[in-house]
Length: 397
Ligand code: BGC
Image 1: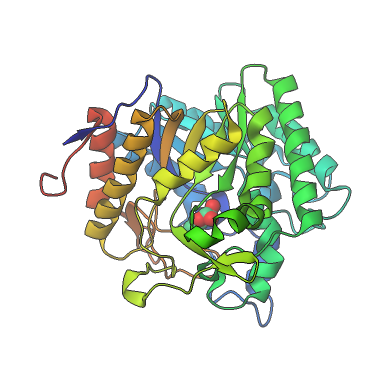
Image 2: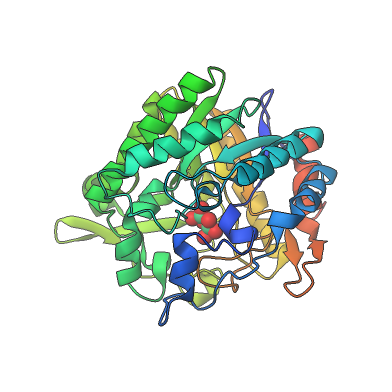
């Protein structure tokens, strides 16, 4: 049995996002994308898992299992359905969620942008985008006064690569993250800086960061020198931006082996289907260790919070085995002095996986007809690891 040396105050929880769980996010750009003729989405989000109405039940499940933290997002499209028109009702709703979490002993980590924008927003390449985001953040700051951790933007490196990801066609991220588009990346970086300034001015105690998709990139020996140029636009430049933050969010799921192709690095051929998860990514639990070490190497003294880690599988024993491997790698990084301050599993619930209901990442399954929630054994397992600070062997669980 390995002891995870959880430092005092270590965050231990699960994560969700608004669009993937709430349902009927009708004023968002994703809703429009899902419902347009010929959409790249296999299925729309519809009522999702109705967490807009059932968030209290979701939080009860997390708290009852022993989790101490809950990461969820605020939906910009609900808060600002028309440009400059802010919904007091939506803000009140999210304030209730924050209070509901605190009442249950769950510390909220609140994300302000998780992939979706209001349908009226022209995109991050629009020169007005950072100001528009900052204006929204200033409104939301009014309901965040007892929230310790705020993430401005979820996976800016994936958001900036999104148009190219779409062009890559079926298979999506399983083919590797395309190079982010520079104008979109610049818009996101400047939106993050402005949002951080707004938050720090309004809430002097708040700990601000953002969450980066950081996978465990493993170059073959000949590709080592070229790997830095491959990684710079895809994750390093976003991690460097975190040097002025209070923490950096790492979201790790898999490894990507890099090979040399001419004088550039590129992802190796995909592993066999037997080694892949429902999303087509290699099943590689130890990826979390490599990802937090790489993030720490780049950001220097800024602490890391694992804001997402998990596996898309229909087999909950495999989910426990994956998480066991990931936490063992995390424990080794902590033992080596890497400053990690928290772990959030993705995801609390089976939810809408950006175009499809197929991949199931949840610690809790949801009947999409009745919205009845059924906790899987992995939820109690994760709760026990957090409360005991021990990773039991797989036989002992
Ligand atoms: C995103 C989540 C997503 C998960 C699994 C992350 O890229 O933040 O919204 O569901 O990975 O694909």
